[in-house]
Structures are given as structure tokens and as C-alpha cells.
Amino acid sequence: MPFWAYALALLGGYLLGSLPTGYLVGRARGVDIRRAGSGNIGATNVFRVLGKPAGLFVLAVDAFKGYVAAAGLGSGLPKTLGTGANGPEIAAIVAGVAAILGHNYTCWLGFKGGKGIATSAGVLLALMPAALGGCFLVWAVVFAASRYVSLASISAAAALPFAVWFTGRGLLLTGVGLALGALAIYKHRANIQRLLNGTEPRFTRTRPVKNSTP
Picture 1 (cartoon, one colour):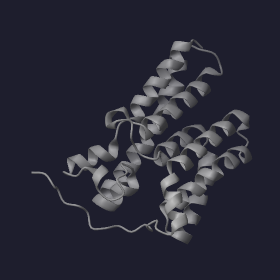
Picture 2 (tube, rainbow, N blue to C red):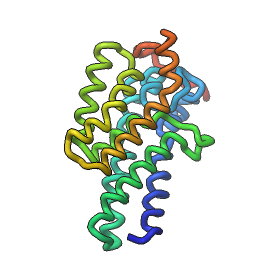
Picture 3 (cartoon, rainbow, N blue to C red):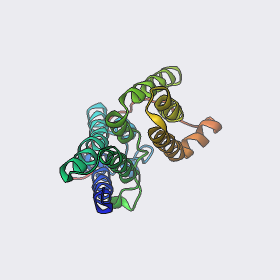
């Protein structure tokens, strides 16, 4: 597969992932989500600040970005170009990882973004759905027990490489799972510090913020 084809998958995945869904939804409601709640543009903060419909919409779109990047752009591009048998899987990995990086470090907001959990879930749904199911189970159990979204996400991220390995996806995807899990944990480093200090807020939904601009 030619280098420029991988470059297209990388660029396309990044630009797709860089769409700042939470920020745009907040602006449509007259709220700069970066200055409300935790300041994060992800679905959890949108849910807290703007309410359930907005939060679920952001969650779905952010996950869809990752899925389209890996399953659509990443896999479809090599097939269209008529590349070798391994091209689609590798290009899907490249595009999927690029989408997560685009979400986490979006060029539209000064290379600051979310934590990539929903977008990572979309990528995993395309590349390794069985492993995603295992990680979601870990997430659900930890969240139900603790009511900490951050702790549940960190636990699921830590479980990811093991879930990939135990579902028989091989060394390449296990390595990808290890890298994605490490990135997700790194993006939660402030949450980890608050968990250790006992200052991390448990998940509760506040009253949605009304429009703050005419």
C-alpha cells in the first residue's frame, strides 16, 4: 500500500475526529462548554451542563466519528485503491487512532479537546467489538459501584489490552489496545489526582444551563 494512502487515512481520520461536537452543541445553546462544569468538551460534561438530550447526542456523534473513521474511511480507502490484503486493517487502525487524536487535540480549539472515550468506543466497535463489550462491562460495573465516570473510564481503559488479547485479536491489535488504553488514562491524569485527593465529583446531573447569549 503506498505511503500517500496511509497519509490520506491519517489526515482524513484526524479531521473527522477533530469535529468538536460538544463545543458546537454548547455554542448552539449559547454556552461555551469550556467555561462550564469541568470545562471538558466531552459528553459527560455536556450531560451535566446542558442535560440528557444534549449529552446523549454528543456521545453518539463522538462515537460515530471514531466508527466512521475506522470502518468507513480506514477500511474503504484501501479497497477503493485496490491495495493488498493487509491494507484495509492497517489503514483502519491509522484512521481510527487519528480520529481519537483529532478529538483529544482538535485543531479548531487550539489543539485542546476531550478525553476520547466515546470516540475510542466507536473505533473499537469497528475494529474489535468483542473487546469493546468486555470493556463496557468493566465500565458499567465500576460506575454502578462508585458513580465516578472517570474511575469507570480509567478501569475500562486499563482492561482494554487484556480484553483484546483474550478475544484472540493478535499482537497488532493488542498493541493498539495498549496504546489507546494508555492514552485514555493519560488524558484522565487530573481526574486521577482528584480521586486520590477525594475531590473528584460523582456523577450527578445539574439543571441544564439556559442560553447565555441572545
